[in-house]
Amino acid sequence: MFKVRLQEVSLPTSDRDIDSLTTWFVDTLCLVRKRGDDMADHGLANPVHRLLRDYLFAQPEVGWDAQMLADELALTPASLNHHLTRLVQSGIIGYTNEGKGWRRYYLRGGSLSKAVEIFANQASIIVNQRLEMLDNHWGRENPRLVLELPENDRPPLTLGIVDHRPLIPDSEESLLSQWMGDFGLLGERPGKEIKADSISVQLFELMMGRDAPLSLDEAAEILGGQKARIGRILERFRSSGMVERIPRTDRLSVALWNAMATQHQRRGEDWMLKKGGFQRILNAKQQTKLLMALKKGKLSIEDVDKEMKNIDPQQQMLLLNLLGGRLPLGHRMNGEDSAQVKRNVQDSLDRVLRRMRRVAEMLESELSS
Image (tube, rainbow, N blue to C red; front, side, top):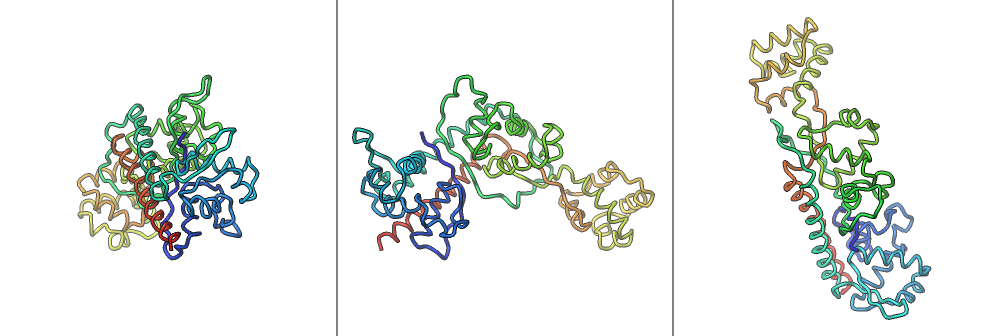
């Protein structure tokens, strides 16, 4: 069964030696839970690193006997089998049976570049097919905001890719929760989150049917969970490329009201007129109405919304910036429809696969020199 966890890692820049490039592959395929930088030897003595560097990558045309590899790497058969199984599941290496339980392991395709190409094609097909699940649960109808602002700090992609398989009989998981677990939306070790009614599954279902961005406060109120926990879940969703975190321009009037009330109390009318953007963006009538309401302490969100109705949203954003305010952030699905979410995830995956192809070429060049 094809099973791999991909993590987006920056291309090596200065260090392009064999060890650095091999480490890049180990990190990208998440073959070691603890990253090399956290180890005293930077992971160079790790069995997986040595297995790839000294055997599979260095001599791609050779089939390696498991017992010989265990002796060379000073590993128990069980430990070696664990590492080899993960590599086989990732689609990078294959094996031949030679009877009596003996196997020979080899790099697929006969070279690293070909192995990566096989891996890339297989991963893309599986992701494309399994993302069809979104169509069955999609319920968003009018997701666009009046003013759309892009996400500024998208996290690196972390995506699980697993073959489809039937549910285990009498299992507590559902097709959706299994699907989420396979894509890494439930974390590396889902535990109770794999249940069909877990908070992660409920949150994802909520987002697939919700037009407006979802704030942490709203999610906590709807689902009854702790904000810190929901925040961690949403970050996992974002890392998959299926969810984005954007400024909530649908709350622009609320943000303006809060900024006006705060700055009027702190700095007064003169500052708001000259430096706060009132004279620059609002006409005299709007300035007077808003300042009078502020002076009486009766300014409401409805008042702000009414006065801003004829002002371009971009100008409203400028006013908010001049007042020193900020928009709250909200989470939503990364696309207006399920097809766009699929494209965005596939684009992120393609970016990682292009890097894998490039690093494979660099590594082959280093090994041949």
